[in-house]
Image (cartoon, rainbow, N blue to C red; front, top):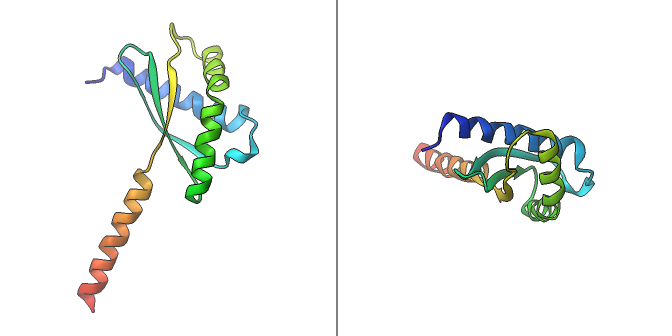
Length: 117
C-alpha cells in the first residue's frame, strides 16, 4: 500500500524525469519518449521508471539502450533539481500497456466483424 507522501514523490520524480528527457538529454537518437509512470520502493532506494516510445520496436530497443546509458546523467540532474534525502537508483522499464491495449482492441474489432458477416 502506497502512502500519500510516496505517491507525491513518485509524481514529482515522474515530472522531473520527463522534463530532463525533453529539455536536457541531448541525444537525437532517443526519439519521442513518454514517462508513463514512476514507482519508488518504500525506502526510496529504487525507482522504476515506465516509458513508452512512439514508433517501431527496433526504435524502442534503441531508446531503452540510450536511457540505460544516460542513467547517471538523469539521476545526477534529478538530484540537483529535486530536494530529497536519497535519490533512488533509476530502473527504466518499457511500458507495453498501450501496445497491449491496441492488440486487444484489434481482437475485439475482428470478433465484431466476424459476427456482422
